[in-house]
Amino acid sequence: MPVKAPPKKEEPAKKEEAPAAAAKPAEVAAAPKKVEKGKHEKKHRVEKGVHAMYKIEGDKVTRARPTCERCGPGFFMADHHDRYTCGHCGFTRYKQK
Ligand SMILES: [Zn+2]
Image (cartoon, rainbow, N blue to C red):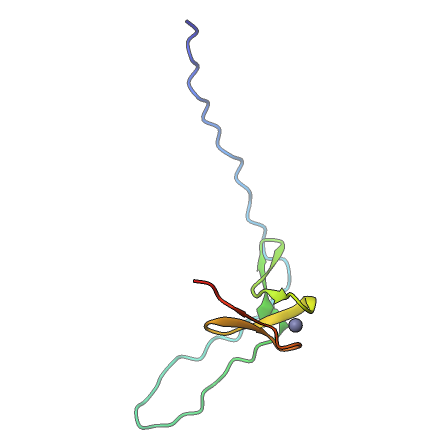
């Protein structure tokens, strides 16, 4: 009976995390949430731009929102709490639970 060789412990070569070489604009620090009762403060809204639609992981770009099925790639859909909506054609896709 052949002796089964113990499984070699091969550790996968650790991939060195690529330094974020892509010049990422310094994200504006979110303003601390301080809501005082009685005071009606203006909500500070962080302006969203196309940069909010993409996330850079390592050297790959992922899209944070789905694109419109009607308009095709390039048209991101707005992320609502229960649905995605295309601002271009009005297409709405409800989130499945
Ligand atoms: Zn659309």
